[in-house]
Image (cartoon, rainbow, N blue to C red; front, side, top):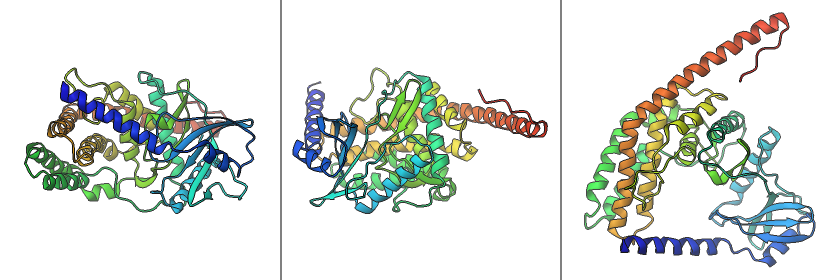
Length: 386
């Protein structure tokens, strides 16, 4: 208990320090940036609760409420222009995203003293309610809408590695085995290695390349979706967009919106709060399939990709904390192995229900197509989907 408490304190202190390091936009910074925009008189500045990549503040002016960001030095100007082009294009296509404001320089990306800034409208709305199945279904539908639109975006982002593949697990495991000079993590890392090899048989590189690819959002979690009641009101934060298989977004959404707390003896030092909730997972994927069809191959790989995302995050947590206590690292790795075993047990049931829902959706699409065909012949409007 003492070790756990000490580590929890260290994590809290680190999170506080990280927040202070990233939220360093001063009032003078904000006033200087707003001087390049015609957004009225500044009234109030407030800090967001989350976000560690860019320095962000919310500003209230006489003209409205806005989000002001200083872009991280790690992100290139070319990538920022790409992201802004994507956001503008999505907005033109009817996707609810924050509206970028044009500076007096004529650009939506402001360069000032060697740093990049942007200002966009603040999107009003409500937070995610973890037990609201209607919201969860709406997340799936919104993601499918985004994918359906973005697949026609004419520009690709800078090339990057695939998000979740067995090969990434093997690379992370190898690095940790080389670092584990005392062999304290050897048994667990060996289990990760064997599991990655098995997953590679199920999900080889050739299969990954054949999956439908597009510009994924890359950061599908609750802080990046704004709700209005049971429906998604807006999608925000496009900093992690990448060219990848679309089921990578769907896997992230499942982990973020369809998870449930783990058992009483849950390994709290790990990355995740628990496994998936079956009803939430079915509702989210069904919501997606009501807008965009998923192939049998994608559905069969979805539990695999979720499992890889779990294992990869645990490995990265250990890799990013080289000074961590071995007991902490062992518990982090143990959580990933527990989640992997959970997916082996429950994945087939999830897949069975997803495939059943896909059959139902396919039948519904066929009935609607026939109604539209017959309605066109008779001049009668087809029945709307419920």
